[in-house]
Amino acid sequence: MRYSRTSKALGLAAVLAMSITACGGTSGGGDTAASGDTTKVITANNTEPQNGLLPANTNEVGGGKVMDLLFTGLVSYDVKGAIQNELADSIETKDSKNYTIKIKSGQTFSDGSAITAKTFVDAWNFGAAAKNAQLNSYFFESIKGYDAVSAKDSTVETMEGLKVVDDTTFTVELAQPESDFPLRLGYTAFYPLPESAYKDPKAFGQDPVGNGPYKLAANGWQHNVSIQLVPNEKYSGPRKAKNGGVTFKLYNSPDAAYTDIQSDNLDVLDQVPPSGLQNFKTDFKDRFVNQPYAGNATMVIPSYLPEFSGEAGMLRRQAISMSIDRQQIIDKIFYGNKKPAVDFTSPVLDGYSDSLKGNDALKFDAAKAKDLWAQADKISPWPADKVFTITSNIDGAGNKEYITAMANQIATNLGIKAELNPVATFKEMRNLVGKKALTGGSRAGWQADYPSLYNFLGPLYATGAGSNDGSYTNPAFDAKLKEGLAATSVEAGNKLFNEAQEILLKDLPVIPLWYQAVQGVWSNNVNPVQFGWNGVPLYYEITGK
Image (cartoon, rainbow, N blue to C red; front, side, top):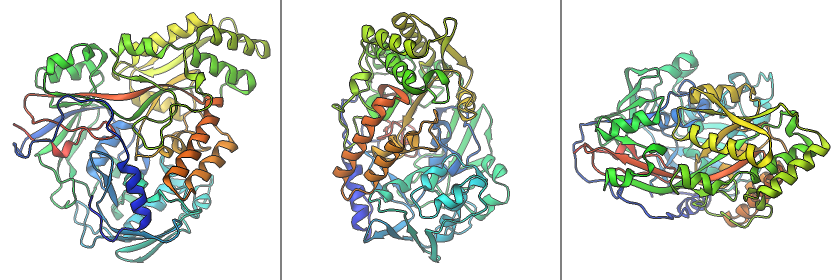
């Protein structure tokens, strides 16, 4: 880790980060070769980003993979999830509420414009302000004054808790003490922006100027085709590019990507589709990795659907959860390469517990599920002709297969009609979610932004959170989250976050399905590829043969 003059609080965050465990075995994917062809342009799979490439408006994987190469923040995360300094020279606090942040001098964006304390403060204020409607605005909730700038129709544009001291120093005052605040600062929402971004944010999102290990090539984003990145010669951090660039090929079908990598027309694939799971270890021999990461799969059931509100709705959520035989789907579709979920987070995180009160609701029990559904019908009958739909994009690996299987289980075990509602692309599905236009359940999941239990809870289930797809709200849950954030130790905070999870296990705003593992492969044209704590390849480390 690259720390200098770090505070006690930052050290605490580092301890949390380093406590991620590498459970399970892997094949291949060891240390990247020290030498190789550093001029080769690496090709990798991706999907079309949902929105323009603005840090505070990117909250899905397709855009996130690109943003993390185009930009960098105060800190970043290494292969094991430990934080390492990027632009931060020091992050200091005496009370976990007031932070003094010093950035390295002489740093610039790829266009040569200076990175200063003001570029951070301006970017964070832009991300939080209601008028800018950024999807990641919730990540600034902890900062004093966020409520004023984020309120509907607010004309306030700056948070009281952010102050520029000089070109390399700014201060952050939080609304309450939060000892893990520094750990979040490597997430996309906290990246700085150049002054040019504010003149026309929409246009900037199509041709962003960043400060990360790569920059966008001229006319680099060919929508629905490819995104071409080239090394940023002005970047001097720990993630320096070791190749000639990264080109993301944008696929509508994971099977097409798998076919390409089998014929060496793609260099790295970050998730083998179900069609390849049975044979990928033999097909790729020493060119694969199979390891757990900080991610999960869920099904959202929106609270705005009348059939799933009140006591009857709670019973129906439990019934649907218990009607799903997760292990059968994992065995038949994913060839045993996942693990049934027993909570809302991930086993690779510090503080994870498999014995939370109420997690029986996540265990398959067809008889109990049918009884719960009958209890709900006594309160508010389910219309005989109503179909329980599960919306999912069908351009992702295995989505169509597992959603269809899950719908069949729900229909059979509850005696209702249930089916997949297919949409063509991930972007289309996310747009439906954003418009609150779902008519039933929806495929969902989470890939960690930073290594913390809270990251699987606050952004997804807190009232008004940017990724709260089902519009869930529970004041008791919100209060428990805040209590956990204010805890004086990692252990105490995790205990409180798990108590918050026990509230979720009653309400089931989403149905946890399974924990994710990455089954990644690479071509004969590159050296072994490392995959990080969050399941993403370390693209900047990849070299050609």
